[in-house]
Amino acid sequence: MKSTVLQKFLTETGDIARFSGRFFVEAFKPRYEFAELLRQCFFIGYKSLPLVAITAFIMGLVITIQSRPTLVEFGAEAWLPKMVSVSLVREIAPVITALICAGKIGSGIGAELGSMKVTEQIDAMDVSGTNPYKFLVVTRVMATTFMIPILAVLADAISLYGGYLGTNIRGVCSWDLYWNQVFDTLTYGDIIPSIAKTFLFGFAIGIIGCYKGFYSNKGTEGVGQSANSAVVISSLLVFILDLLAVQITDLLNLT
Amino acid sequence: MIEKSNIDIVKDNVAEQKPVIEIKNVFKSFGDNQVLKDFSFDLKQGENVVVLGKSGSGKSVLIKCIIGLIKPDKGTIKVFGQNIPDLNREELDKIRVKVGFLFQSNALYDSMTVRENLEFPLRRHSIKTTKEQEYGLIVEALTNVGLADTIDKMPSELSGGMKKRIALARTLILKPDIILYDEPTTGLDPITGKEISNLMNELAKKYNTSAIIISHDLNCVKIVAQKIVMLIDGKCYAQGTYDELKNSTDPKIRHFFE
Image (cartoon, rainbow over all chains, first blue to last red; front, side, top):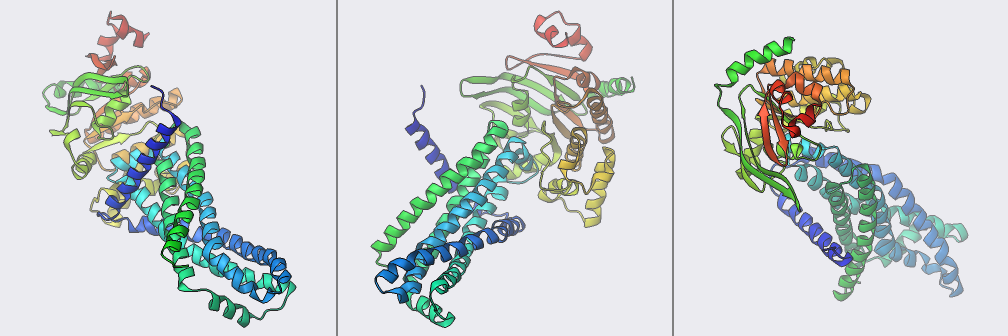
């Protein structure tokens, strides 16, 4: 019997859920792969920083420049740092960081594990006394889960700096005044939920990239498909998780 | 000629040896495709057995079942007396130290140098060695395959034949008792294929290993096989020496040698 699109979707969702569940079983059992975890943190965190920093800076600058005319119309130009800081910290910096990482890291993991799968390197690891899930998946998912929040915090800071420059392109706002306004506006209710959701983004990006790569088939064509679908699914998941996180934050009156 | 005489000597000893691998009534299917149907055979200590069969006949599935990468649906696969499908990960790892596996695609880790590729099984199997001993083992393994000067190269810098030799060195570094070769000469030119086949014989003699070789390259089969097992329709259809099977009147067997 030909399986329908819905059946395929449900089967894949179940497989991803099982694959994610295995992470929690394997992550806490020895042997712990600290060296590989650090290597992945370096590649995923440090190597993604320039791209995240440039994007965050530009987003901060552009949002400030775009928001200014509307505020000027209402005579509320002085509110620019307040408004921009809330937008950037609550939503724009974490989501843009996650999307950049979904593109860069998600596709990288999907393609790397996919090519390892089709060239039997994963099987070679298995016969060399290594649990490939633990060595390849657990380390990468942990690295994305812990590095993306750090990148998001840095993106917050860099985008706010971009906002400061944007504020001073058409107006005048001193360094001290800008940061005083920013920190007067921001509360823990803005910062903590926005950082908390980046852990979920990081986990989703890592697990989808690994899942797609780990179960890649059809040779080199399959590697391309793995990389592509890793980006598409993890980007979509970032938005879905963002939506859920915002709803939960709202229900808990944290905003 | 030299290889033939060696084989004859070993063959006399083999008959008295007890099996190191015993495969009994193994079944494996993927969906509706029944790949192995009641497959049985034994590998004795010091024996080089070639499993010959068409592409897609289940040869690779068979050796992946032996090393525990694929679980058979039914049947027993005993390696050194232990039934592979019943073993947990730790027990399997202990067996895998004694059983080397040469992958068809070499499976060298792209992101690691030749040295790191060879270090990997030593470190992962927690073989207790000092840095100097580890280096000594790597150099010995590379010297065995004639590529000691490639130690710091990346796999992408090597030719197909060199990659195969490095993969063989990585398989041999743990000094396994049994080696499973998955199409060792596929994708190589006839001269390099012959060099690899001769190397397999030399190393088997040097380390006294047993081997199961999956191949449909008759030049390789002729050089390395002490015994040939014909895998046809998922079963052990026939077994014998190269000459016995070549002179068979059975059309299914003759088909391979024509």
